[in-house]
Image: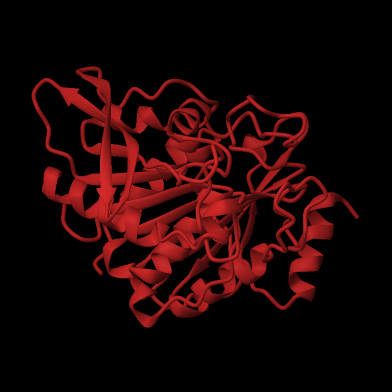
Length: 326
């Protein structure tokens, strides 16, 4: 039995129904995004203070000729031990802003106790968790500030997180679902209980089945630094499948065009009764604790799929979500 088959067998044994069917637009090889040749991306830094907690944040915004008005905000949440600049460099998410309609904000975790930036996702990580830092309120406050600045309505905000940042994204979405349109979570899990108001959200989760930091099947990763007992991918997504009533029969689609020499990609989609995809999992067989499409920081973090263009995947995800009514 190959690696994909073993994994699917485990998922079925756990009683979780996975759905697939992602479009082949994801199969294009990575290349610079060229949504608008008349736009350039400008990056600025500023500081936002909530109560006595002032932190810097990074902002990427497209300036276009003719001028365009922002339509959505992507909040990019870095991994534990990283920061806003490193998150931008590693993921390449600044390029999302080159359409002139997307603003990308990179807040930072708390640094008041030690130099290691982490987020309090409830069960992880580091000093932010130990000191019970209110990162949910902090990021919500920054979102409110930027929504007012750019004239964005509720439901025009997407959370994109990596590792500890993905964990916080799930916690934020469960805490304030009325403010969020969707979550893009990479290599981070957390068991939450989303309220009924979260039924309008869409979830995109990307995870490698050879992740030794936040394991696919849960537990403590062999290479973890936090010693945290992580939720499995199943336990992370199942509450969202339930709250969005994504009960359609299983579909599993292999995306062979996205495979590379060391990894294989499969999409699992959950649809509601109307056929709308509410939750999607992109599983990377052989993939580690990495952002797809980036070749940086492999080795200790594990393999990264080199073929997938996450900016294209995210653009498609956000375009689909914007066509849905709450």
